[in-house]
Amino acid sequence: MPELYQIAGAILRDVSQARFLSDMYSRQISFSYENDSLLRRFPVPRAEIEEVEFNLPFIVTEVKADPNRHQSRNAAIGRIFDDYSLRIVRAGLTPVQKAFEDAAKGLTDQQKDKKIAADRFEKLILSDDYRVTLHGRLLRYLNEETEKLLSKKDDGPFDTGTALDEIGKVIAAVKTEPAVAGFSAQVQDLDAAFKEAGASIAAALTEMAAKVNSAYKKYPDYSVEVDINPQALQGNPAAASYIKVKAVVKNYRWSKVDVDTKDMRNIRTLAPE
Image (cartoon, rainbow, N blue to C red; front, side):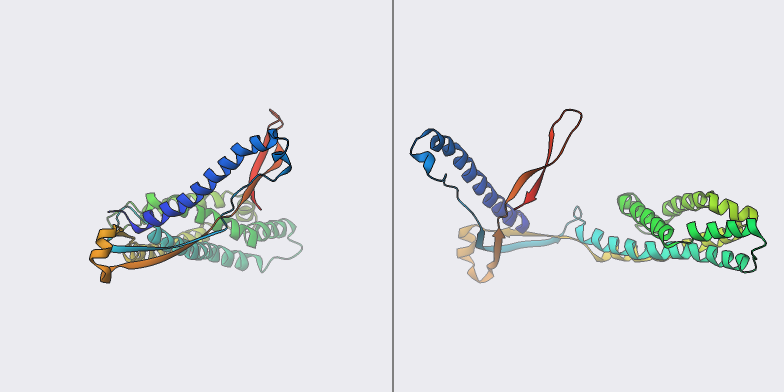
C-alpha cells in the first residue's frame, strides 16, 4: 500500500510537471510566432498556475512505527543538543573563570608581565566570542556525528564515552592556547581548574545523554498507509478520510551573480520573482 505522503507528494509533483510541460509548449510555439510576420506582433501564450486546491479521499489501512524514519526523533534530539551544548560550555568555563578571578584579583600594575598575561587571558579565553566559538564547535560536532553517537546500545543509544573523548581533545587544545599557556606560566597553573572543568563537562554530558536516550524512545516516526482505490472508497464510505491540499506555484528566474575568472562562465542563481 502507498503511504499518504507519497500520494500527496505525487500530486504536487504532477502540478509542477504540468507547469513544466506547459512552458515547454510555449517555448516550442514561440519560434512559430517569431517566424510569422503577423504572429510576431502577438504575445506568446503561456499558462500560469497560480494556485491548485484539491480534496483527496482515502482510507487508512495501517499506521505503524517506521524504524527507518527518524525525522521526529532527530528533531527532538537536535533541540537537546542545542540546549546542552550551551550548558556544557558553561560548565567547562566556570571553574576556569573562577580560578582566573582568584589568581588575578590580587595583581597590581607593578606586576606588569602578570597583568599583561591576565588581561590577554580574560580578553581571549573568557570572552563572549570565545564562548560562542566553543558552543558552535560542540554543536556542530554533535549534529554531524549524530548517527555515530547513537550507535551504542550498552548504556543507551547515546555513546557518552566517545563524546567525552572528543571533548577531552578540545580541552587539551584549549590548554595549549598561547593565552592559557602564558597565564599558567606567568600567574597560576590551571591544571586543577581544567581537571574540574572536565568533571563538570562529564556530569553535564551524562545528564544530556539521559535526555537523549529518553527522546530516542519517545519520538518514533510513523508511516500511514492508505488506499485510494475508488472501489474501496465506495464500499466503505464511513471509513473514508479527506485531506485538502492547497498548492501555490511560485516562479523563479535565473539571474547572473558573478563571472568565473578561470573560464569566464557566468555564475547564476535562481531567485524568486
